[in-house]
Image 1 (cartoon, helix red, strand yellow):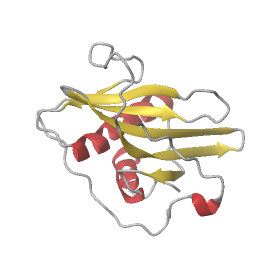
Image 2 (tube, one colour):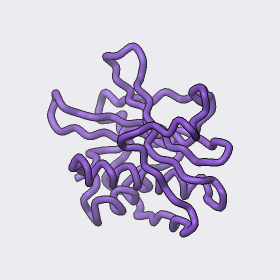
Image 3 (cartoon, helix red, strand yellow):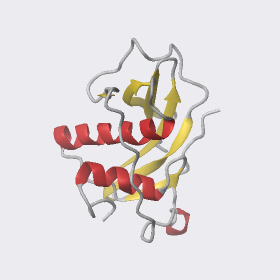
Image 4 (cartoon, helix red, strand yellow):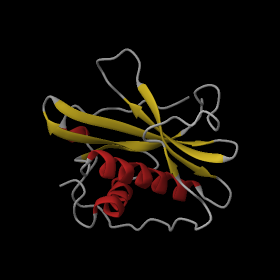
Length: 165
């Protein structure tokens, strides 16, 4: 069963953002190539149906304006030969959530922890370069990745001290 993200509706429901440990991400193996899927969907490596079992990594939000925001929930799928990070857009105004593939990489010699962090780094870097995506504003829910992990990912993309201003 795939866990549905829980969007916080009060400040008390948001995970603690300010006092978090500083973590470093594991290095990415040199032999593995990450492919981000910003403009296309990799039909050849995706399973025919939506996977039933994926690890929930967590959710982050951008809140630029009361009428302009973005909430993304991230999931890690262990496919036959690849690690795939999926993005779920939990829109409360739509009957079904939109699913996208963020990025993928070969599984050979890559751990789940490495894949989870670095595939999100790759996707956010592509969006920052192409669309000018700025750092997320807060982590709305922790999963496998903690607030500290998401901040470490943001540091790799946008630099030190910029995440979650």
